[in-house]
Image (cartoon, rainbow, N blue to C red; front, side, top):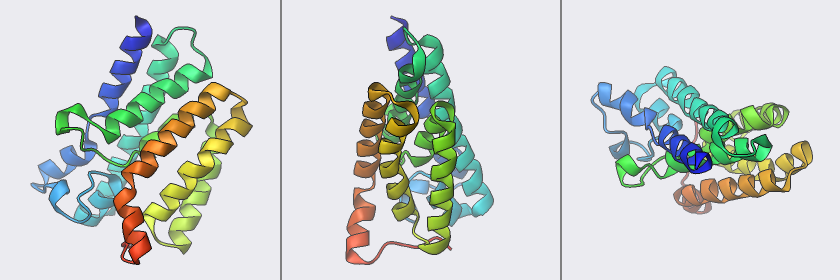
Length: 194
């Protein structure tokens, strides 16, 4: 019973849309501006870098809290429980029940999950992401690269098949949430980070 409760609670934490809350106070509908994505990058485009950074940190914390809830409430604990709780938060972020399952891309929340469960890998992937943002200047390319690298990275750093499978599921969800970005990349029309 505690496993189900832990996953539901982590999902509900993940489903809090910080992008929508931040832009509502500025009387902006984040789903009607820019890319329409309720995430940190679109908030930064709509309201500036400080607002985008605040949403980024908040979305990261959702993955942290989800992972900690998993470790605390899921039976048998262990690293797999942390990954499961974090994954539930990512699902909540991407598919929030409050917004008809139309949420963000899940990258920052997945980053929070990795920060708790594989912090060295999290730091390495953050450096790769930042380097790609500086060079390629396309957020989706950096995000898709690091989420893909996270799957073998979890295997190498944890040695856990269960954690790797959970990370693979998260990666599939994040890539699926980027389908419009992928289409724009193929068309050569994806926006750059300024």
